[in-house]
Length: 245
Ligand SMILES: Nc1ccn([C@@H]2O[C@@H]3COP(=O)(O)O[C@H]3[C@H]2O)c(=O)n1
Ligand SMILES: [Zn+2]
Ligand SMILES: [Zn+2]
Image 1: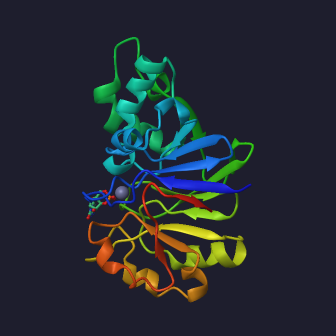
Image 2: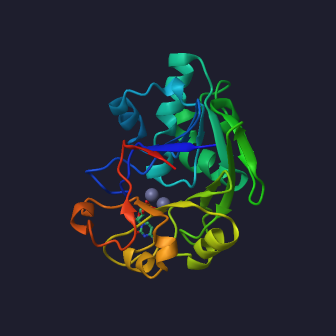
């Protein structure tokens, strides 16, 4: 099954030239929204994409640039379309997403008292492949980002790796390419400064060309244009363009 990807945005958390790093993944007529950050509602509006054309949302972790648009999404689906959005989420993220992020704004006594009242929740477990639609499966892979906080990268159809925000994990990337048929890697990048909770361009440039050629870079800062031609065998993913993966 050929997947297509259209990023709503390719910016890092504080980018102003680019929307938050959230993507629409198309598998035939099924549309999955990967992460729904603060700018997702505006980016969808800019693309002319109505909310009810999205079949499900999947979130990687609970930073604002990945979940900050969920409150608006849920309210508009409920009061605008009379529907509950489908939400794919790692079991370990349910409690923090509800208790620490959404409860304050979304809860209404007797109407919305839990995440299940606002979303059609579908739990994901590490190591288990979930069939999202006839042409789309996903496996979550926990990858390090903020110490002590869970964050999950995604492996689609056993061949496409989509990194969550994460530190550099060369062994994982090498294993996916050499042992698990990985054809394409959508990877976050930090262009300047120390990585700390992200993967730096310098780190990705240390990968062998065989892996770099599979990588498209995303979640970058406003300085991206000045790095064109300086990314080895890797290219930048551009927001709103549709890529066949
Ligand atoms: N220890 C941390 C934690 C957070 N941050 C910054 O805050 C952003 C939150 O969203 P993000 O996309 O994960 O990027 C994080 C860092 O820019 C950071 O730089 N160092
Ligand atoms: Zn982020
Ligand atoms: Zn993050």
